[in-house]
Amino acid sequence: MTHDFVVVGAGVSGLTSALLLARNGYSVALVEKAGHTAPLLRGFSRRGVHFDTGFHYAGGMGNGEPLDVFFRYLGLSDRLSSFPFDASGFDTIRTAPDGFEFRFPSGYDRLLENLVEAFPAERSAVEAYLRGVRSAFDSIPYLSLDAPLDPNGALRRVFGPTLRETLDSLTGDEILKSVLSTHCLLYGVPPEEVSFQQHACIVGSYYLSARGIAGGGRSLATAFDARLDELGVEILRGCGVASLSVAPEGLLRGVRLDDGRELRCGGAVVTVHPRTMLDMAPGGSFRPAYKKRIMGLEDTVSAFMLYSVSDLPLPILSGRNLFVLPSADSVRGIGNRPLEESPLYLTAARGQADDVPRGFIGIFPALSETTRAWEDSVTGNRPESYRRFKEGITDRMEHLVKRYCPELGRATACADSSTPLTVRDFGNAPSGGLYGVKHKVGQYNPVPLTRVKGLYLAGQSVTSPGILGAILSGFMACGNILGHDRLIKGLLACR
Ligand SMILES: Cc1cc2nc3c(=O)[nH]c(=O)nc-3n(C[C@H](O)[C@H](O)[C@H](O)COP(=O)(O)OP(=O)(O)OC[C@H]3O[C@@H](n4cnc5c(N)ncnc54)[C@H](O)[C@@H]3O)c2cc1C
Image (tube, rainbow, N blue to C red):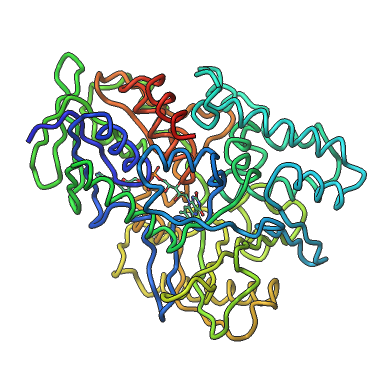
């Protein structure tokens, strides 16, 4: 079997890369280890309630905003129906135990108004912060179609300043700092590690607007599948790539699948975790320094998660998320705290037949080390000690949710729960990190171009996490093949 390109991994970045290459005339095979494309997006159901696992809401999906334009270019828009989250407050940040609340509205102007109303003495800090986010967001190629392709953009993410340093330079108000740092939970890196540039790349889209997709992540996965089919992409599901075939002169010439089949190709876009990519590459493909760097990359935080169903609708989570901070500095060192001191992110789960919240997902960041004792066990065959540990964590999560959010009522019951090991095994994430490799100051993540000719890298670890980040990574990688100017021109025509 010979194709122009093989795309490895059918998460959002792989699906995007396959569509971009096929839309521009190449023959493409897309290889996914799981039994479905986009396994992270498909979620699962319990007691008639569907729990999304990799997509709840996104920023920048409003008319003409970056994600909307990406969807149009990729041919997904007509297959998706998005709906606005509560424009007056899509994310509520609640500090416990004093019950202070701040609600993030859609739009920079409204956000400025709400922040100044809540922190009247901090107008200049808030203005400077929002100016900084906006200008950083607008400097990112593809997110802004006018931004030049600036190689130093990536360096600003490595050299900093960090979000924490930026906030410290603007204000001494610890509550304001924690409110503006809470969205770290959306990318799994604490404020003292993430660069301000990277933070802005993610929150900048949510400050534009926040929207959901009718039917959740499954609808997005189905839209991708239909478009891939339309463009004739060959999809190989349920069989991973075991290794990359590289000719002695350093040219990629194919991939070998777990079942021994060989796919010949002129090039490949690999979207898996960078350490998995390294395992696939023949020994001499990369320099020792590059290998050492990839092996040393730190992963994003993992999580314990609670999936609950409710007898009654939960209007508090309709078009809204709730973030609870047990103390002003609880996002500092996220994951590295006992459950009782950890921030909590609560988002809606919907019934099968309607879009009304009939349950919720509670996400407590945690380090993968918390389940290290059972790391050799596999799903469906974990020891009794793990089961008891998980039961204990689940009881504590239920108790905390009830304490922090009495509005969720007594009509809720736990339907399931998960640990960092679940994230590792269901998400094919080597260490159980929620969002791949950290983008943090001082850490050099791989870039799309590699030393192996014809081998390109994409994915959340390369560019940025989230649906927007994963799609962006597909554009960044494929721009090297198709020409960035050509892609930007195509996007401009869709604006
Ligand atoms: C709990 C949770 C909630 C989230 N909520 C949101 C949200 O509300 N909004 C948002 O925008 N983002 C959200 N995200 C983040 C978003 O889902 C991810 O950033 C994005 O989907 C990552 O896409 P990717 O293609 O980079 O990686 P992945 O989806 O990890 O894709 C990599 C693919 O490669 C496959 N693979 C691995 N090894 C092999 C192999 N050897 N051969 C072939 N295939 C292989 C994997 O199975 C996987 O499908 C959430 C993530 C999590 C974990």
